[in-house]
Length: 246
Image (cartoon, rainbow, N blue to C red; front, top):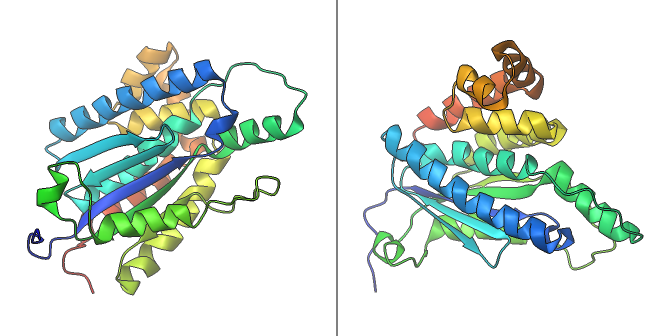
C-alpha cells in the first residue's frame, strides 16, 4: 500500500462538458483539439510563472481532470476551463429536433461544470497516472451529483463547485464560486474569450493585437464581463493557506 506524503493538501478539478452529445462530429473534433491545445497553454503558464506541477487529462471525451500539487492554483485553472468551453464557437446548425436545440443552447450558456476538490492525494500513484485520494473523491463526487438520467427535464442551477473536509474552507469558497458562476453564465462568447486570454497571463495589449481591436475595447469587454471581481477572487484563493487553515 502506498503511503501518502505527509498531510499536504493538493487540489483536483473534475470538469464535465455540458450537453456534449448535442455537438456535431466536426465540432467535437475541434473542441477536443482545442482542449489539448489549452493543456499546453496551461502548462506553459505554470512553467513561466514558477507554479506547481500540474497533470491534465481528457477522459471519455467529455470529462476533464486536473491534478495540482499546489492547491492555490486551482481556481485559476478551473476558470480557464470554464472560459475556454464558453468561448467555443458552434457551427450554424438548424435541426427540427427542439430537444437537440435546447441542449446546444445549454452548452453555449454554461459550457462546463467544474468542481475543485481539496485534500490529500497519493503522489506516488499520481506519477503513474493513477489518481487516488481525498481530493479526487471530492471533486468527482461533486460532479457526479449534478448529473441526471432524466434528459427530458434538465435543470442547471450551478456549474462551479468547491469541496474539502474543512467546513471553514467550504464556508468561504462555496459562496465565492457561486458568485463566479453567475458572472461566467452571463458572459458572452467574446467576453469569455477575452477573459480566457487574461487568465492565461496575456496583457490587454497582447489580446488587442491578437484580435485586431483597440486596447480600450478589450478593457471594456473585461469590465463588462466582471474581470475586477474575478481578479479579487483569484487573489484570495491564491493566497489562502489550505495547508494550515482549520
